[in-house]
Image (cartoon, rainbow, N blue to C red; front, side, top):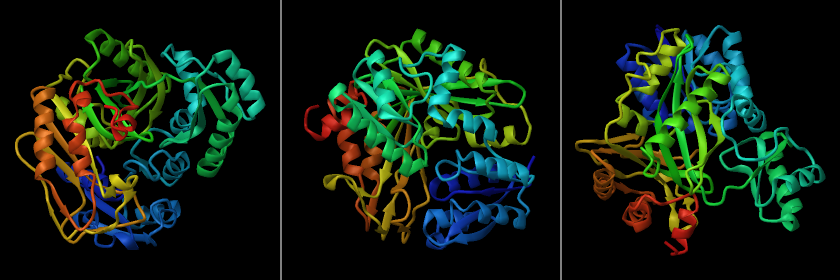
Length: 449
């Protein structure tokens, strides 16, 4: 087992990883930008190193500085968390070249699954259901239009290197196709430096359901159930829950089998997520694979009683998984709400500033993952999420009631938050009925649901 791990991240996920390492008796090294000098992860780690100024490109994305810090502090491994360098194959390869273990999949697998069109092709070959669309990437509007005519509208145009909703556009018919393709491709070039695109038949107003998988180096792949992430805005998730309120036992079993097949097809190791689109007939289609731990991983931990971060560390150290597929049991229902420093009434504008006072909810079945505290500075340089509230109940009704209570109890003074907005969603009849799809937030804001 490792003696020391460097965490190449910040905020609540860095705190989460530090706590997992502490429980395992592993020393930790925090890296931080000058803007994060007084962040909680810096205080909690055994050692810390400043790696640059506030801008992420000069600090948390500075590969040379992070590797230098790891070698200088004697860390045998690096956990990248999520975001930043977590799905950067170049970083994973440089870790390997410098005899530092990257706690995640191999750079070759990251490349294979990070390119969305290549991942789609791989899933087709593995027999995993995919939305009808291109098997090979397209590069020009004229080329794409010819392919689109064979698929049929509406068409989802996607960046092959995409993520976070960037480089994605929907074309409703042939008349708007060239314009939407051009917009998506420009976004892709700007965000990822890649003009490679692919096309899918657009599943209108689907649900977003993902399966958590984890695999060791001995060929064992385990699926730990699904998470329903349909409540999202601009492809950014807001509320996640497990299990999905709509899946039948039979569909869930097939989806988990396909998720395992997908991971096996690429020789996957570590924690990852197979993401599916689910239509109103409960047909599901592979969308993409996230080759990292995800923001919403606590939902799975709550219903399975596992610790995914500790398991990632064990796998990276060469140990087998501590559980099998047969030993995984599911208990009750879990929901996660992301608490952001933002102004929903003003188009969700970020609300940086100093938290002068904060009170966190608690009680049986309530978990809060956060790096914020009284006096904490919410920086304008990074993501606006300041906390995740996760609740567990005997069933979905109890979990919703616990989450409403937790949102009522949480107090944040000094910055605006989306607490009231989240509470309003929990009170909504469509959400309560479990019928919210990916169009829910848009319709909710218009007062249509």
